[in-house]
Length: 234
Image (tube, rainbow, N blue to C red; front, side):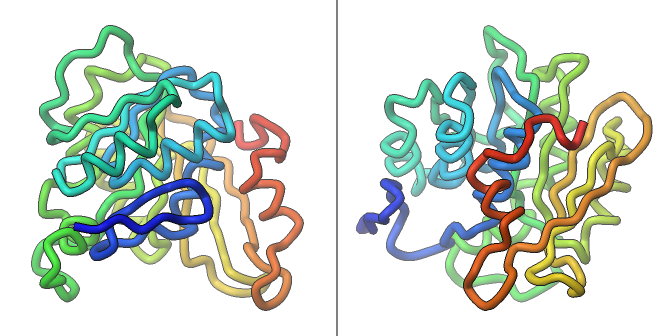
């Protein structure tokens, strides 16, 4: 499989699932919680981990991806970042020397049997829960998470309520909800959600990505560049 070189110094397979702005939104959201040691679950070619390193160079982590096709790309992208890349099932992750203070994921969201399953196996696994749901992953990863640790997930808004219910079943409470719309006045299409074992007030904020066609809003520029006030969601 060939390699496509991008302006952002990242490589990914020429064919198959393509990363998008979702990955950069998730990295910017995770940065707000100032992780010291994180795990990127379902990491693909490592773009979320790579971007989080750009925003927070002091953070270390482990990017885990089950699909072997991403192994070469992930390890190349994350070389020199202090973030390791593992090609294995997140549910079978070996015990780490250090516990994670944050789990992050841009996971597949279609249940098996729902939505059109892509004939491309890479796309199919990226969009459908063929290797378990993100709540399954978090349940398995709980033993690797610090007691005061948390989980950051980006998810389509239309499925977010189901995600919150599934996460609660495995012991994680919604604490922060960032609703992301394309333009002011539109319904959000994406949600960034932060979960922790500790129940409490849910803080909700909104972010509009654009002020006009193809022009980012000032808030989105600050958020994506990591210059938004740290801890604003805490």
